[in-house]
Length: 215
Image 1 (cartoon, helix red, strand yellow):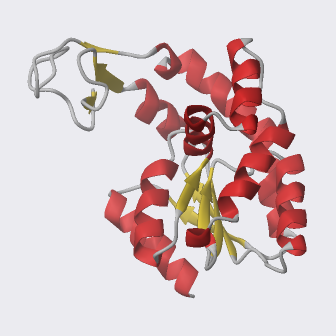
Image 2 (tube, rainbow, N blue to C red; image 1 turned 180 degrees about the horizontal axis):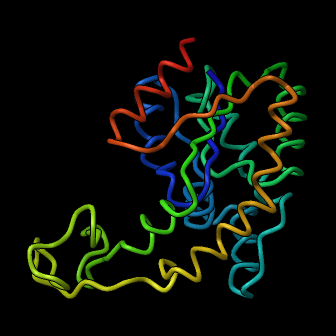
């Protein structure tokens, strides 16, 4: 299957993408992983992307599209893939359609993870990370530490990342609404979109998505 996963920041796309890809036996292709892999391997696209990133500029669509194309052409992706974070705007969605047409392939489904905006803000703004180990993550409401501000695992100080502050989250949501949401309508016109509630336990959301894909 060839699937695109979309949804606002805080919808749990990364978590769901990994679980769905494992269930379906296809690679999970995320934009973040593409950038990290190309930069660490010193590819031409990686070097070009790094120049923009060092200057604090957005990486042009053509570079992101090139990285996605290279990854989708790898042997493990021959029978399908799940894209997470790509396409992120209309130009990338149109480019993906063109890539698939050229390869004689087609998109099977677009899963739209739906979360109310206030819940997105609550999920992200409530997140706290350990200064000693960024893998130690808590939430002031959903998974609070035993002692406020102290990591249960190692005793390190818990802090709120600048990216997780409410005003930053709301700005990220504005960008999502203006840049990424239009691709949902684009894919709806092709009859590809299934909207999934991303509320509730992670396993429940995964099951909803799998059921929708099988249907």
